[in-house]
Image (cartoon, rainbow, N blue to C red):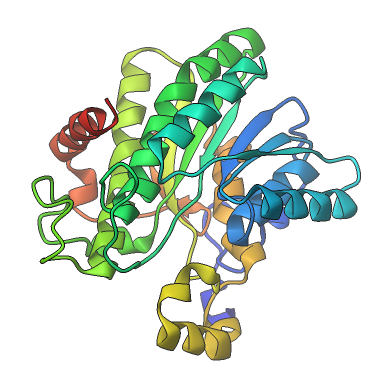
Length: 313
């Protein structure tokens, strides 16, 4: 990654790791949920947050894998406060069950890291009859955020500390279908393209964060909402494409970020004091970056919000 090493205004670059961008930060008073924390950048995000003192709850589809990651983190960070709870973002029932269980624990919630995702899958419908990538990457996180928002607001009021919601999007949000969000064709198998559908779900992540930021600001709530591109990372997101996966395995370490670098922007946006009060922005390499014109469309963001509310109703 030497050719991406130019530092931005934050003092960090594409080569910076999650540990480096959070160095010296004491976050021991905070509690966070990290979705998709059983592998990849989600697991590294959970580890580094725990390293900085955060009480981390990992939302994981495979609870056995989640417990293995928890044990590995505790071996690395013996003082870590970390737990795993079952969460399948593709199932609205699972999301509701997770949120209900979490809220019943009486725990605070300072940080919500909407990280989990799938990429370029063959056309499939979720249990709720929603195209799987849109269901998992956007709809599940949208519902989860709504169900946990009151807990976050209560935490803000009690702790006097800013809450932060972080949507892990992707540069691929710039390569959705030409309509941006195919409201009338979400489940259209005939016109389905795996990568375009992935782009659509990632565009939805940015639009969701933007509209949420607007609503929170309008309501005078001290919770920020931002989205980010973690970078091109050699993870198992490519498992659906054997040729791409093979190229990644061979060349990934030379042209892509490793997991430690891939989790950096997430941890930066979640913890760094430079991000305090910043909301409705899109980050890449630990600095504010440009989105697509569609991602800046406030009317599209509002339309997506209303559309998704109907899906989860």
